[in-house]
Length: 217
Ligand SMILES: [Zn+2]
Image (cartoon, rainbow, N blue to C red; front, side, top):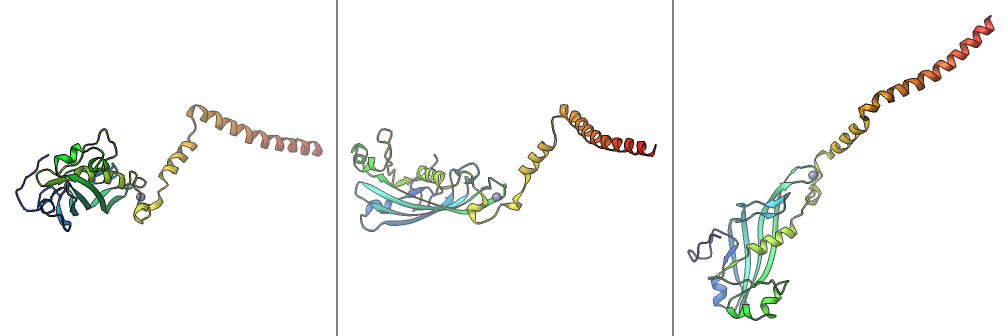
């Protein structure tokens, strides 16, 4: 991934690359930092997400734990997409919170079962997050958390709105199907209908006429 190293003071073009030099120097108060810039990746699912290049703001507190830094960050952005039911456009404020530990020394890597392993779910595949050249990369954390947070099938109701004109499109389509029988049977159905109507009507009238004529004669 492209990255400009040490070029400036706390401002990077990639808002998910946080410059933590201040926190590395001091073990006192957490370093509070903000970063803004275009998202380097797309966050979220198919129907709703933060597009790559969307401006995002990252507000973070970074605490020095000795051999690691605790990075506590909230990412603010706008998620855009479509309602999965009525396809109305969605454009919603979105924030996601991530918190993880980044190692600052090689000891952090080799000391299995201590701080590094605690931060991960799988002991075998776990690769500890590391501070690299006074920077921490929260891209993967944000990606994972946004994927869990943003709804996979968003609907207007998720955002306090009703779907556009409760459209009966699916009902109309299925109704049309019901009203259109197999063309091979359509003629037979009409014939059967005609026979039933005419047969009963003609039979009753015919019987009456016959009786009347007999009486007259
Ligand atoms: Zn909708």
